[in-house]
Length: 409
Image (cartoon, rainbow, N blue to C red):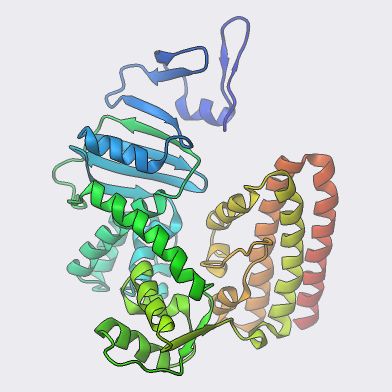
């Protein structure tokens, strides 16, 4: 959280980031007490009416409040790792936007099996522009208007569902509504979204008892029960077609993350499918060696920082989301395990198809970038003196990875 200082002459000193953002302008004191000061930009056409922090107040509480009192405006959440904007019209959510990479429209279309990764990669950095993305996909006949509309709705629902578990962050409500001509306006029932989101939280925990990781491999089981539904039969046929991870099967199902997991869970529960950890043989060779030593460095940082700040694990997840290209491509969908290391199977799958030399170099560069960012984050938690010893050991791990890389070129 940014720190603001008030000196004895009554002058406020803002951090450079905030000073650049606001520049020289006038503020009104909108609200004050002995414990807070709420400043609002003077003559703002869309004033902030309410702001605060999450904790005692949850996202569910806030959404229920704005629904109950039929508010119209934009509710913004600044969260660890990104930002979400929910647009309300008379208390109902009519649109949702997010800066989280997995919630951008391109990733939603990919997760639903509507577009392939190479189509999105052709857009490079411009896929974050939703209007440009929509025009490109329609012009290239890569998706139908119907598929696009369904994806936009699925995106808005996903943004809300993923918001509900957050227990920290800040929010601000602005008096503003969408233009009537906005093509992405939806008609959704806020209370139904809340109930469905809470139900999905509970059920997903149940699913993951039998499916411990999205990187697990799904295989046909010993029992083939009768009376399978259409989605269950289609998923089972897909699993028969060859070795695939849970993540890939769910994506190819076109059902979405939650529904795909639900169908797979019922197949596992009935013995029609079994899930297994990825074969250890996939980790052999130079790639496995490189990742193993780099993971040693990630583990060292994680262990030291988590002793001081238990939330460091979540911070690392946020850093992983913020990696630039091409590193974000190499580490996309990679899971960070409880001890801070990267699960290997997803990364190795992302590297598949590249030249062997490129694979090794990109792996070193991508994980090396993550190590660099984590080292800086750990220094903030541990302080310079304690962090120095950890960073020295991390450098030894990266040096070993460099030796393996040089040996295999």
